[in-house]
Image (cartoon, one colour):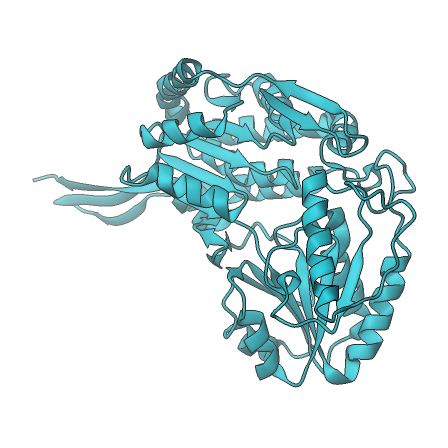
Length: 455
């Protein structure tokens, strides 16, 4: 049984039975049987149907927003995820014709030589709970547009998301067997992957979860995309707009209760700006309103689960015990459970867990740095590599710094954003592969060469 415990009050918000092994295998068989006809439909038809499904999700937003609050705790004042959901799907629809176009090498009287991009067949999307609609659509939209069938397995914390997406897509005309929302336990998921049920598997989640996917796929030659989180740094250079940097980096650290894979988890500030930056950051965070996400007044909701909050509390306590300074007093609404006070730490070092392990919560450590070289060394001193944010008035300087950072994306003067025109990718323990952009289509298809001798 998949069971969602609401972080609002600890009650069971939703529960769904998982498929048995036989039921899961039958779902795979139906998807594979339906995929050929779906791939044979004109690309324009597939694009239109996916766009209609996306629009249907938008029509459901009044239902979706409070359901998200109940499942994972995001305040309703932020209005859900449809903006980013629609932006990403729309961009992938817009570039599909060019991204999937044949690469013609020769078409003469003697030969036709061409490389086509063909779908993998059946794609499994294993999506996380923190941004459950946006992370799912990153793969669902281009996979369907490219001609794949898709099975979506959502996190147990957000079981209603896949149901809403399936309802929206099916009502738009996408066949039920082409897009299936499934509830699977870990073992059944691993067994299906090991049995070569899928042509491609995309997983967004923890490092241990990604390792389990890799182990299940070992020896099957199944394509895998893994986005496993991060410990993303921000660097405020000596020529930065400090006010803009504080506003954006602290929002990037605290929004969604810090539960974002590309959220800012450590900040390095040029020495001359350090005290000013910290003072402004503390002022912002002290102004947050922690509380029930169903209240319009709430700016910071509970973490999605008590155990996630306890991990963050543990990191903070360990850091303080090692000499870190905590700047935010405990909020009155902090119940010792899912409702967790945000925290800013200084006097931190990379010997502390809070500066090395993924926190995935509303805490950030801030350190002064002497120069670019010092900041680069600290940014690279991490097992993760998803994004980094550099704040400077000099684009050439930013790019020179970016060239030296081991990460998937580098931002200048912004943070915590996914640009669908660029490849969403990472390195080190953040995983492998790439989503969105033209490269996203390349990963969701395979090249197939045609060498046709005419005479």
